[in-house]
Length: 193
Ligand code: IMP
Image 1 (cartoon, rainbow, N blue to C red):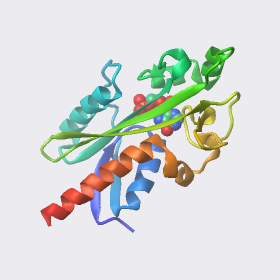
Image 2: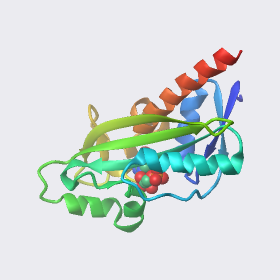
Image 3: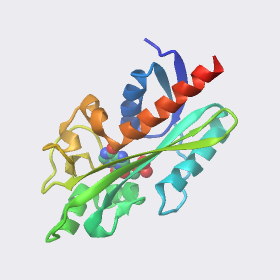
Image 4: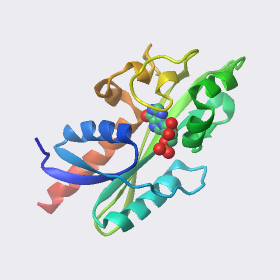
């Protein structure tokens, strides 16, 4: 059943869309996907990258939109790959990360998400989410995407990739940012009514 409210989610990533759509359904908000390869600026700050993407997405769609940018920040690697997560995933992948961590004492890491909404007039608002965890010794699990097979959120024994979307959504960095957005969005709709 379609939700009472609608928002366009601009992304080329099917997995992110599924996760965000599921969370927003809880708030009676329908996420409608618009595929677009948005240009990504070079920055060490996820928020800056996401805001630039939101600006471009709004130029294309000309309606209220959301975009999301995420990255895995590994303590022992000085926060690498962080904003370079996409490139690192496409090049050395999860195995490459495990190799870089061989002999490192700490396997602590944080997954961060920056979700940016551009309202109908193009005004930008950012919602952040973060989850701390550890990098596993081996790849584990078939669900999800990207670094899911090597990230174990704190308080859990399983990697993200051993969780179904609904389970990952109870705790993930993206779900935290999405819930913050949904709370704000619903509050704003109520003040309009
Ligand atoms: P993006 O720039 O936000 O599309 O994400 C950068 C990269 O980080 C993606 O290509 C994935 O490899 C990785 N990534 C982002 N979010 C997640 C996640 O929730 N799980 C696993 N990997 C992720």
